[in-house]
Image (cartoon, rainbow, N blue to C red; front, side):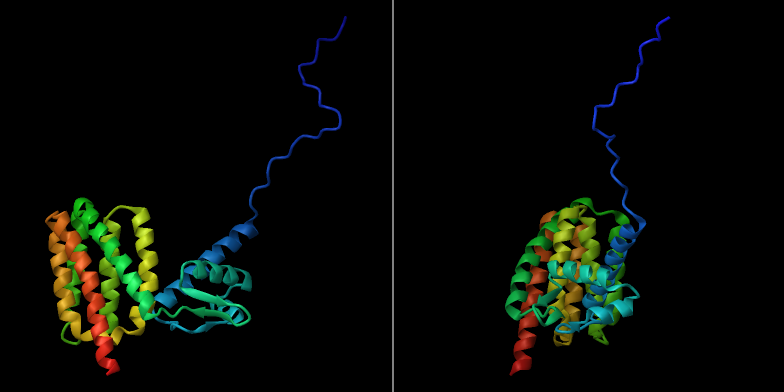
Length: 245
């Protein structure tokens, strides 16, 4: 009796089964994770003022300080360069970026436009608990007015505007806003003590912004935020001019 025909498809001569692509190794995942952590920590220290503008970053020293190998630090430097927070100079090394007055003026103009859009969208989309968070930040700003503690006020200002940007519920807008602000803050932090006399006025502007957003007044919120950013630029420029006299 003849054997039944086989249901197995014959393998083509000279061809081997195609292997499935290899999954990422644990080492590759670990390296990627360490790069991200190194980048985030360096960004925090630069934006927070722990590493001053103009500081040279040594790859070996940074790796030792963060407890990682040089590879993740090298990749972190590259990412920070793309974000505009450091500059890489051939044959010289990596330096925390120093933002010029001219560059700062351009960042202020872009930020003013972004803040206007943030005001419009936040007034439309903000949640009640976020409004209360903003009011809480303003209360802390009022508490700092008498002492005019510029460093602490600067941190509250960053917190306020980032809360508002998140309340706009637009991830593309948030990413672009943070990119501009991070670079602008390199300049603002270097000159932070020059504008401490304007804390009461700035606080009043923040308070008015919160109330416009809470009232769902999109037009007023957008206008107040745009004016606030451009007014901050003018106040800083006046303070710098007085110090240069």
